[in-house]
Length: 143
Length: 148
Length: 215
Image 1 (cartoon, rainbow over the protein chains, first blue to last red):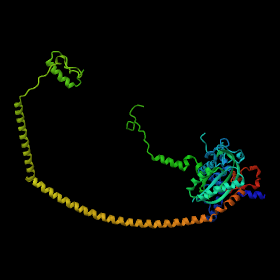
Image 2: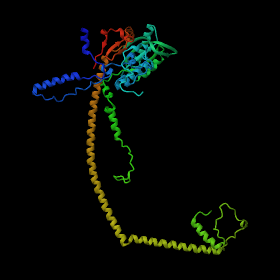
Image 3: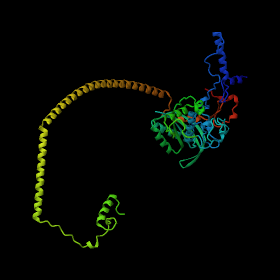
Image 4: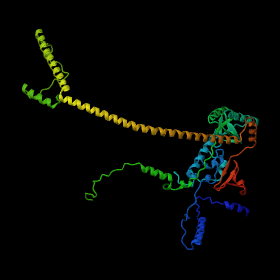
């Protein structure tokens, strides 16, 4: 139970397409309530934010503020294809433009400094958690 | 003086030899007017690929990091110096820069092209250029004079 | 066939009609054709003019031309004189002089006016440049002050950060070698971090997993 209490506040649905309908709806109720107290009539509340507004999507590295370093071969190889050892493109990794650029440049740095193999993903890293699925790209790709 | 990070890859040596070799490369930095900030050892690991250096194939190496401040003109000299060191397999000097904090633009990028700001700009830009339009060879009056 | 120009043909035909009995048009001999055989060794007689006659003709010819030349010169000079001293010419000269004086006066006035304008403009310009120079001097002073402050801050920061002295290099190296650091970690879509280079994810129990805070 103690563990559940620990985890529950920071519980987070990882799906990118989550809506924030419920918390906003509660806000709407509260404003309505306040308005009725003041005006004492059943006028609809004005200037409400869109309750169907989806939550802003964020890439993994931006979301958790992960520092991408060239010495960290394990993190870098999470963005490599196990078949070709090359970097997945932005439509597959689901990163924002700037982070994708950083990842690509760090991979080149790591290869030059001898931390990361060229055109090879190490077998040890195959069982690492998957950050991207090439079969389900974020955006349809060319091939 | 910008701060740099030097990543050294040394061949497998005994500890006293390793220390003396590292000391040698640290002293070359000092001689070039650099200020040593920090030493970090990563340890001995198998290399990601076999590397040939100084007429020998290497499959294992010791990784070591040196953080230092030095004038930018010194880096070229350092690279030249390290190239001739027999104990070093590969070196890499990286400029340390503080990461710039940016807002994640993924939401903007995932929109369909018509709603993306950069695409809208492109469309606007293309509209500015006047294209030559084909003039239809019409008779010049509103009605069609011949039988249809 | 040979004659291309129609007008020439027309002329030639007329002549040939008179001279020759045949109806064939007169045709010029081709350019490369040789001299007629009958005329091959014929020597044309030289024209002969007696020496005294020749001298007489030359004298008459020279005389005539000398006279004509002197006459032409005389008339030319006379016309020039008339143009200078005639009544119309005098009037023309007078008008020209008046016009010249008027134009010179106008020019002087215009010059004075522009000089005044120029002086005013230069004055304003000088004032402006003086102001600009003053502003730039003040700006530069401010910039140098800021630069010095920046340099001081940078130097203080540099001095504050710890550095390894030349004598302590060996000690620092040994210290670093004793404590190796591993930069490797893998992350999860849920923000869990798996530190270490080759640590299997299953080996870390769920309670001990590290989790990053999401923004």
